[in-house]
Length: 334
Ligand SMILES: NC(=O)c1ccc[n+]([C@@H]2O[C@H](COP(=O)([O-])OP(=O)(O)OC[C@H]3O[C@@H](n4cnc5c(N)ncnc54)[C@H](OP(=O)(O)O)[C@@H]3O)[C@@H](O)[C@H]2O)c1
Image 1 (cartoon, rainbow, N blue to C red):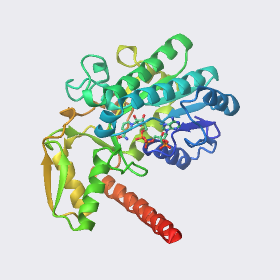
Image 2 (image 1 turned 120 degrees about the vertical axis):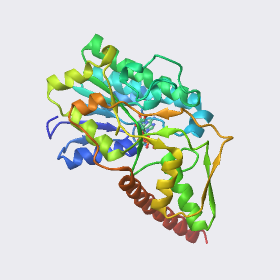
Image 3 (image 1 turned 30 degrees about the vertical axis):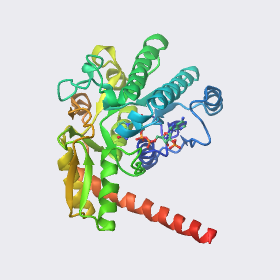
């Protein structure tokens, strides 16, 4: 990617998109195209067509998606499948129509079968049943991977599907309805600490194992891949089974119970951790095999404890902002 190339980051205000934008800006890319959700509704095909025809990006990162934790996925499966299918279809189709050089589509590790061998290799895609609680989301993302493959085969596009593990970092979602496990733990521990509570209840048994990657590390890996010379980029597109698919993770996991203890230690919550075993655990283990990414010479830089501390700082800054806003609004009403 040339430094003056027109690069569109879809979903630039989200956790993944904002990390991509920071990374690209930090590397000196100066023609970054962004639209907020309010400015461009990506489920609106005509609006997406108009945007691509007007702006003609050369590169596209697809980080816009309807995303959520177990509760949101379980409660709103129709919205998850409809919204994600339509966002990715419109962006990828218009990218092809408008001659985009390279596109990176962000999926998620939940595309892999629930009980596949660990660590999860790219070739395990479509080899078994999916985890039920987020099946609608996963099927939409699998369709996105297949779109990348199909457009590359039929139209000669250069679309890459990157599957990050669980991400966390600045601009994460902290409301308990929509949050993933790590930001949800940050909020719960913080509220327990400031509210003087002596215990925090955590969904499930605490035994499932999960991998976490700081969003800036994910962005570093994705920008590195999109900047590779043509030959090297082409090799990533020829993944296992002809899929242009690559896992993005740190290669290490821990139990939810250990994660909760790490968050408690960073937040400074000293009460008890209670596990509500009546709630679902989700997939027992999810660790990505990152051999393909490692072969490109990439490894993460931010360890879990440092990352949680940075995420907690971001949470506090945003909470502070929200409280000030709440204060101002209540003052205005009075
Ligand atoms: N978070 C993770 O742990 C994780 C892990 C692996 C992969 N990923 C992947 O990374 C991608 C982004 O996830 P994220 O965690 O960054 O999500 P996020 O924080 O919720 O950000 C998504 C962004 O997309 C925008 N968006 C959603 N629907 C849109 C629409 N119809 N039109 C225009 N903009 C829309 C959202 O805007 P609004 O907020 O205004 O709706 C938001 O800015 C997803 O594909 C996800 O699968 C995430």
